[in-house]
Image (spheres, rainbow, N blue to C red):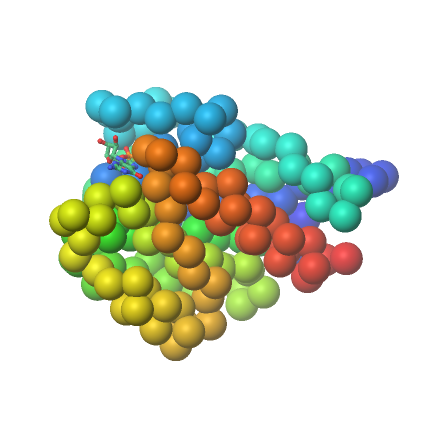
Length: 177
Ligand code: GDP
Ligand code: MG
């Protein structure tokens, strides 16, 4: 664990992984800037964004990392995972292949990070109910099997985005305090 504690300040590195186009960058921009990009051209090259969250009266800096699109080439580097204390592993509820690939992303996370990393399975794009391809039940079951938190989100309409990050941040805080 490489959480940093400066006086009353905490800095938590959180990574966001999952297949290309599941909405990772938009989850991040919704969380950090309350913005959504309809024609998101992969990622703008920002490594991470920092958002301050308060937990139990403590100021916590969540440093959330974005993959910059490497996931397309299966080349997310170990530097990306280094020092992470939380992870959101994301699929798109309208594309089952992105759900099937979750196993691979969990394997990769396990290879690079120890088990104390707070993990959240995120089914994004829950606004696309009309073309849903992964049931809520399947998401819940996988999360239970793998010992992960589970939530469905929409970066488009903001559903649960803040909550997803806050649950992970609270869990990390619980682990370190
Ligand atoms: P990334 O490759 O995982 O970073 O995915 P992006 O954030 O770039 O999003 C990929 C595409 O999905 C873009 O066209 C987004 O506008 C769209 N998108 C992202 N999140 C949502 C969502 O919650 N709902 C819907 N309907 N579209 C989304
Ligand atoms: Mg992206």
